[in-house]
Length: 453
Ligand code: UDP
View 1 (cartoon, rainbow, N blue to C red):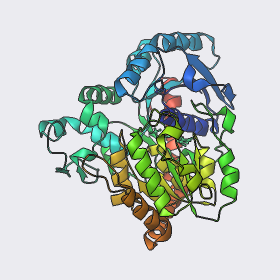
View 2: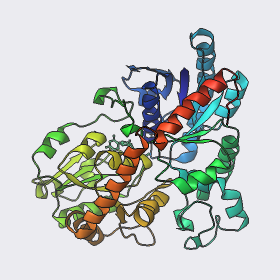
View 3: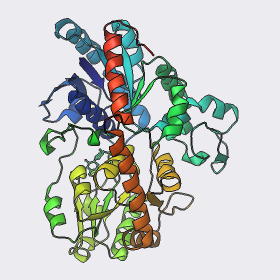
């Protein structure tokens, strides 16, 4: 089968879509994977995956991240995508069995219909987020979304843990029209594919199943036959700094706090300095990813004076990490994370270190609730009402995470989640079964045979 994958041109979205594609390659599928130039870099070909570059009006990474400009960049690639699809349908021997489109690419529904190709949605977050998105009309009619009290408790969403209104995903709170369009679009899809595990999110998955078929086929990193990409072959805007791996080799097991806020979160310079002082005061070794655009300023301007000197023996700052290898390194003992879904899943697959949650945007507040309240695999950094995190809070939480009994409990719970994920990939396990039914359903759809329930 030949499948065309269309991710939103953002690092986290591309990473999940590629991970799912690579997993399906091991099942005999081949892929055309669509990228914009900024993310394509030097990436040419992975086993079974051909990368195609389409023109776009700009890059989502040009300035600090903004949802609406990113969606308009996505709109701008439609003509190039249509041309590509046309070419593939005419030229490729296998034809196109289906499109797997990022849930944010809402125009993919029209394009798939126009070309008569089945379309699956690649849902780049977890099932909790989609269960909430599907329930938005009811939340709106109850006045729970816009302009209401952000502290109000919402415990009426089927399958979803109780949340404060402020913990709802940003797409729900700030982009209701887009959310509506996305949900309408989901209803028309052949199914939704998730990088999650049934055993992690059985309740929201049950709810979503009432609307459309679901395929929780994660975590792809643990799928049999999954092969990780070498550093230089990963699509991305920043080059990985691999020197940190040799630095980690010099440190004792479980001693280093890995600090990363993913590819989109930004922070004020003052907050960066406060965090730096908190890390210093914790006395714990740290590896900190400071992206060139995290505070729209150079690293030297962002950090307190002499910070590098003072923490030289136990701190390393880099621009972009080989995150999977860092998490897998024995020296890493804790993860200060923005709670991006990829980062959470990667930690559960590779490290199972306790997580210190500092959510920033998207659905990260919801993810933090899941980690802290339901899975008990993380603790949350205390934020003021305006989101400010004090250095004292950082130092205290880091010590608790890395040296206290709390950290041990969190690690045990993370290990249990990993065990659930490993079982899902054993013969007869949930991810194995969903993967087989996904493949069968695509085959049936692409040959016009109706799936037998
Ligand atoms: N990542 C990386 N190096 C870094 C920081 C992040 O390779 O220094 C990768 C990480 O492994 C993950 C992705 O970038 O796959 C970030 O995705 P996530 O969903 O965690 O957050 P987002 O960037 O979408 O906010």
